Image 1 (cartoon, rainbow, N blue to C red):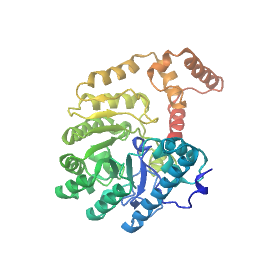
Image 2 (image 1 turned 120 degrees about the horizontal axis):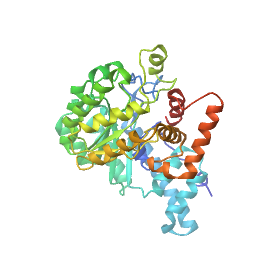
Image 3 (image 1 turned 30 degrees about the horizontal axis):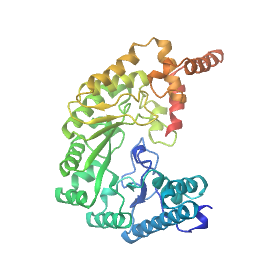
Image 4 (image 1 turned 90 degrees about the vertical axis):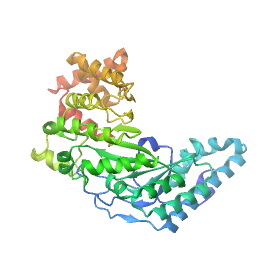
Length: 384
């Protein structure tokens, strides 16, 4: 039995969410992005931003509840209420529609968190957002964490009492794309925000008690501004002191506006080795108490994680370990990481994996190629 045998209900789901929200119930409060000019983001280009009516969002939440109830019914038919996760897994494997799959995956993970889409849900009127969250928690009493994306400029414009009210209503965490703290980099990337606005928005959220996650983009300054990017980003992060700092390495695809700048030479990309040096400089200058996270396949060194300041030396040691490797081993790791062989530097100690990557390199050499930047750049495109 599949979900279509139980209910025809469905609801709208936006295109993205943070990796850390992979098991969240997705609730689309807004459509697309109100700024939508960032050169590095292809997600919403060609779309129009819309604030969804509160009743429309509530209808989606109701539809999600009906799917949830149908899965519970299925569990009752196949083994009782304690079989809910098994029933959800069955639906997850067989359901053709995204809404049913989202509810099933959420239930498999315990059904405790929700993520409000799309790119800047905080732009919604505070009263409307509170009404939506209250209805969501009434509909799903088991939800204990609600998170969303927001722009720094929007957060800076929210009154402290509004953010406090959102926290009281259940907003647990805000994910914000800092990308860089360097104004020249921000202008070039057309981010639509300044370092000062980043600080104001971030500090507003921190002061409210809502958990703040800031995303930093290694490589955003390119070869010309890498140092300014690292130093100014660390300065801004120190001013904000967010709960989390997450790395999202710059990747350039033809769908991105930045691709034209790369093609004409206006932006020269930093390679892996240069970005490692950039991250080293950034971490060396961080003086906040944030948790550093590297939870995306696009990042070269996922082991660069830890709580500041106690784990700073540990993170720098990871970088030092990579930089101390002979060129042959660094090339093996870079290619192996980009091909998905390695999950950490420790993978180099696996003789089977190391040999598999070495064989790929041997084939490249026979074809007159090497482990060059353009090859690694092209492999990175698969992950965004």
